[in-house]
Length: 316
Image 1 (cartoon, rainbow, N blue to C red):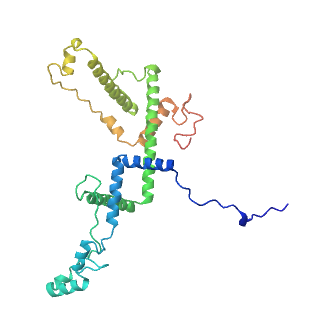
Image 2 (image 1 turned 180 degrees about the vertical axis):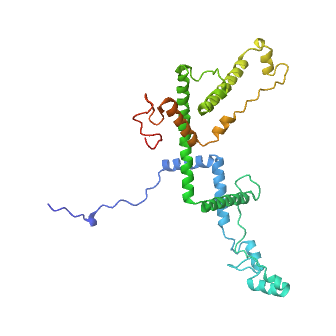
Image 3 (image 1 turned 45 degrees about the vertical axis):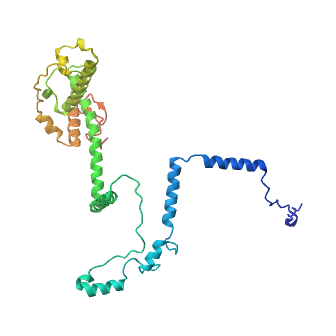
């Protein structure tokens, strides 16, 4: 079947005659308008309205015969589209006639429009914005110069070295824990007793993992002192002895000479090395002393360590 074509001549057209407002509709409209006019505007609305009025006034041209300022400027010789002040020809004549050669060096930038009004929206002093902008420009300029002076290849190499040193740092700390565990087990210390209060001088401990012991004891001492202070603050004043009263500032203050920490030159010399060098030293120590391969994470039963692919990380 053929589709019926639309007959546009006989199509019904909507009624475009505006309907007359009823009495009820007019009453509701007037009531809404009165409510809008009677509602007090918020601070944000008042500020927005004031800003719109100010921008509209600033955009309004003063070139109008009804404007007194415009009429006064015309009497002073100002023409529409010109600039304020003398023309270039008048300035050249004045320079050559009055000041001679010195006048030729003077260049006055004429103004094509009045000074633009800028509303300050912050509490910074006059000129502070320009000073901050200058500092930002200087900082950006220095950054751009540094980027231009840096060799991309040298930068990539430096970043790679820093990343590798950071990775070796984590591996070294892990190897320290393994070395401490194996050394303590070799002298008969149980695994659960490792890390408790030591009974030997700090300098007698192997320098490869001596730093880990010193760091752990320093953290424990800080924790103990903090807990001791909290416990003292929670105790009633009547239960405090003389020493506690002095510690809390409630008794006589006596100056006490603190025992100076002994300098460990051997440990300081060891920690001056890079983490990569320290890692190589402790890995070699684990292999020679305990037949333990840090990369295999395995302790071999024989001296030859059969089955270990090599001494370095790349071999694994």
